[in-house]
Image 1 (cartoon, rainbow, N blue to C red):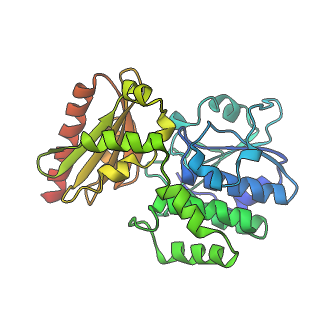
Image 2: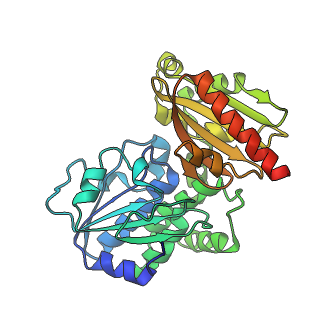
Length: 322
């Protein structure tokens, strides 16, 4: 598996007219930011791009993407389907696999470990801070970066670096962000909306999640929320953004886990680590992500799935220490 060049992929984009762009299920700031930036850039040079994605949290409305979203896809006329920030066809946005398979050409741009290289053209940089940082290299070859593109990419970078905190943040990450500031983006508003803003429902969820935090083996902590909990608060899965960051902020923990029930007896595990490779744990259960930030979905009773995940995490920590 190898990457095609940026120029080769950009040429494929510029040779296409009817273009659709999507990403992983449960779209986050990096997925939406990179999708929006690429869509705006392609529209700027006369293409007809559209975004295909699920409804996302209103915190991402700071990204100028909503006007490009379509619910109607002409399967007979897809010149190009681009998927960003998605390591595998298994976690595509709901319903897009059929469109992807019907496209004349496909492109996969991502930064996750273990990417399947599922596109006709692929560009994967596992050490990049975010897919948005990667998309920057493509967009600047397509058109001049404007304020909307800069806002989109800055939002994605801020989200996936946790506000420039994660160890994937580099000198290049800051350099790119600095260029966006020179274009006059409202970086304080972006930061607040992407990372800090909470609705009343989200605060109620946070209160419940923090009250349930438990510590195992002195260096692993976890919390969880169920479908019934969300129903009682009149909330949805979209209101869970950022909960893992609060769980992972507990002092002295090597690995932190936030679990939520996606549907009955199907639990999404979000894993964060200080230094242990928990991507191996997530990959064992069919998930993936990054070395220190990964996730997976497991079917079964909460207690049973928890036991299985904990066993693998303990092994991963011991392997690191030996």
